[in-house]
Image 1: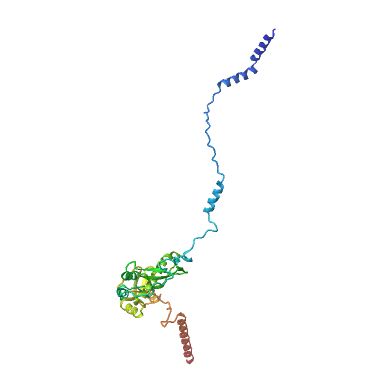
Image 2: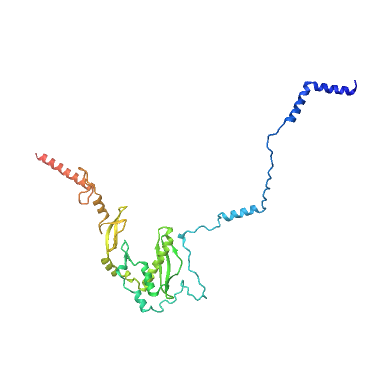
Length: 328
């Protein structure tokens, strides 16, 4: 047998062998019948990472340092430490007058007779008010009206002569009254306050108080410093009553004008001089149960004194009984 016939015979025998032919047929079938059901994947382009500046860290640290509070920063100052409002300091070469230090025009010439008549007008009883504690006063707006009548609006003003001083309970500042371009009076105003939030309002009250004191030198409402005038006014126009608070039921003396009426929460309960204790005992007195001893004997003595008297009385009765038995 030739060589070619022997090779073909070996190949045919190899194909006819079942152990070798099966794996080969399976591999051919897998190659021809393999199907892919997964979708195609497309790779999305990725944006490049942003470049961080070299000095970014330094900028962040700088911003944080500026926004964060430091030990060197000034804390919020309380109004109770003072307002720090000194008057402006003027240059010596300026033509305008520095009213914080100057006394320009003081007592240089008197006012005109017309102005003096307006300033020294007698007070009308209808203009005077009474505080609940009995102090008489003229409303601050009426001082301003008289100044406007005498000098005209804009012809007068208050010039501060120092900074505002704030103590634990009082706000005070010195002012000068300038009329017609010259200084006419100097006074220090003061006003009490009860809470730091009320300091701004107290500064306005301090200014009004200084205006009232300056007007005293001009003759405005000078009668309010005359004791005889005050006694006459109180006798004719004022009355003193006992009032009670509608909520707390507390009672106190109250001064008011005769032509005024009490307002809520106060109401009149009696004439002046009625004590709170007497009113309370007369109003809230409860009946005593039968057989209960009284707290006093009517002479201002207490329970101990009444018990002592009862003991002495019983002792005297016992002694007299023993003496009568001895005589028998």
